[in-house]
Length: 384
Figure 1 (cartoon, rainbow, N blue to C red):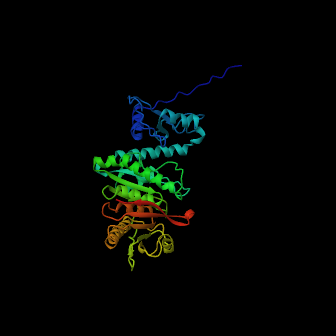
Figure 2: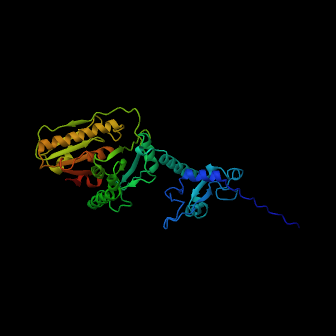
Figure 3: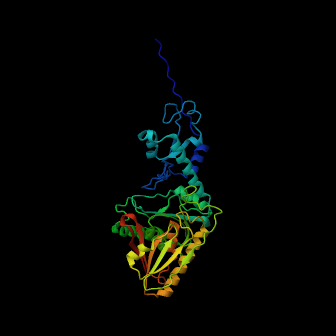
């Protein structure tokens, strides 16, 4: 009986030109999502070395990882089928977690990574902006802001990320929820410390621009805006829910007029109600502070969660907040304070904090609306 000779196909070597192109398109970094390790140096010793693995999305052989009969050999040297990975991620997709890495997932990783590299490397220095993201859990919900969504939103404003890693100021895996007093103490301290260590050094270098994306309870977003203030050159973005969910400012949206309703009788206790997303029941204010209050209100004709669809509308809102701070201070005097009851979009909350001026405006005592607390309750205070 004759023995059948098994012929093993010799793998085709990727030519130098294609290898260089893959390295350039990846920025010399691992293309696995959230890894991004530099592959030209040792991360500890910083010694120059080649740590990159050229990995196949569809395997070079039919029986390899994600191999496809009829396509494997054809795609063996196609750049669209190749990823530059570190050793750990190469092992992850081909061996350790093979079943968890289908072809479609890896194609998206590669495209997203190369898009980020293209964005960062194609911009002039005066159009660079530091992406700042801030999230905090709202009840049991833990919001997330992706780098790609933020970067794509910035392109509409002709700004581009200064790097492919955002400055995240939030707290990962918070233990307390926003109906507990400890939540506000911990979250505020985390936010202030993150700002001090991550953002202040950038401001001290001068000429820094920030693109700010926030999704958190409104008192914390007001504090975020207060930390940046109007001194920092910044663009504020809004998470739009309709017609599709996006951080991009829609085009050709009409500007919404914003109203300031002043109280007829002005007492010693000043209350500022901001009812942009929904109407605020004044009985809830009275249940906390009593009836002897002056309620100032910033609102629109039809409050709703999607009311801010243009930067011009946000600017209208910002001007009204600046105006009301000044008016309340003039009426109440410098020894007073403002009790703030906010129900508004996230971008408005950030701007509410940004326009507040230390040593000029009255302290803000900020309340949050919470179902578990059956209405509004006191959270943070912003003062000199």
